[in-house]
Amino acid sequence: MTQFNYKAKDEQGVVSRGTVEAAGSEQAAQILHDHGLTVLQLEAQEITIHLERFIPFLGRVSNKEIVMFSRQLSTLINAKVPIISALDILREQVTSKKLKDTIDEMMADVEGGKSLSETIARFPEIFSSLYVNLVKAGELSGTLDAALKYIADQQERDYDLRSKIRGAMTYPIFIISAIFIVGALMFVFVLPQMISVLTEAGAELPFTTKILVFMTNFFKNFWWLVAAALVGGILGIRFYVRTTGGRFVWDSLKLKIPIFGKLFERIYMDRFARNLSTLIAGGIPIVQSLNTVAAIVGNVVYKEIISEAATEVETGKSIAAVFADKPQMPKIMTQMIKIGEQTGSLDDILGKLAAFYDKEVENMLNTLMTLLEPVIMIVLGLAVAVMVAGILLPIYNLASVQ
Image (tube, rainbow, N blue to C red; front, side, top):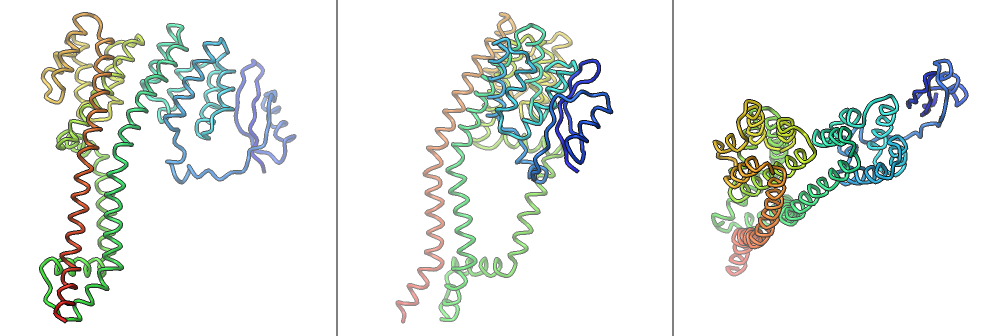
C-alpha cells in the first residue's frame, strides 16, 4: 500500500488537503470520489525516514525560517496575492519539512473558512502568542501585510540579540570544554603511567602528587560512578527545573549570579519592553498585551510580576505603580513607564527602553568577553601549575637524586 497526498474539493467547493492509502493512484482517486471529493491534485508520498520523530530537535523550525516566512508573506499580501496562493508559493520555497507540513495544514484551514490568526494559533511551538495577537490585530485593522513586516522586524532583532549572546559565550565554553576533555584524557591515559613510575621508584611524593594519585585511582576504578553521578545530576537538575517550584528557584538564582545576573536582567527587560511596545503599537488591549508578554518573557519571576500588573491594571491601577513595589524591576523601567502612561505614549517610551537595553546588553557582552579572556588564561595557568607541581617536579627530583 502507498500513501498519496491529495488536494480535492467537496460538493460545496471547499478545498481540502490530506493523505489517503491505496494500492495505486487510480484506487486512491476512486476512494476520494466515493467520499464525494473531486481530485485536484494527487501524488505519491516519498518514502523517507523522519529523524525528527526520534530526535525532536531536528524537527524544530528555526527563528531564521520564521523571519523569512513572515517577511515573504507580508510582501505577497502587500502585492494583493490571495492568502491561499501566497501560502502555496511559500510552501514550495521553505526548506524545513516541519514548516512545509504546517503550511499545508494552514492552507487547508484557511480554505475551510478560518482566519490566518486562528490557524497559526494551532501551532504554538512555531508561532508565539505575540505572533498570533499581532496577526489578529492586522486582520481586524486590514493591515495584515504591515503586521507581518513588523513581526519580521522584531524577530530579526531578537535573533540578532540571541546571536550576540551565543557568539560571546562560544569562546569561553569551548576553552572550558577543552580543559575538561584534556583533563579527562590525562587522568585516563597519561597520569596512571607517570604515577606508576614514581610509585615503583619509591620516591617521597609531595602533597599535590598524592592528591593526583588519589584522583587518578578513583577515576580509574570508579569511572562508571563518576559518569552515573554526572548524568544523574544533570537529569535531576533538569527534572527539578521543570517543576513549578524548581523553575522559580532557578530563575531567581539567575538574577542573583554576580555579573551575569545583571546581564540576564537586561535581556529580560529588553524582551519585555520590545514585545510590549510591539503589541500596544499593534492595537492590542493593554491587559491582553501584558498577559501575552508575561508568557514569553522567559523568566518566572518576571512572569509573575507582569501577570500581577495585568490583574491590577484591570482594577484601574497603573503598571508603574505595580512595578514600583518590585525590587526586581529596575527603577529606570518604572520611571519611564510612568512617563509613558501619563503622556499616552507608552509604546514609544517602551521602544526607546528596548533600544537602551539592547545597547546595554551589547556593552555588557563586550565587557564580559574582555574580562573572561584573562580569567581563562589564569585557569589554564593554574591547571599547568598543578600538573608541573604534581608530576614533573617529582620526576625531576627523582632524576636528580639518581
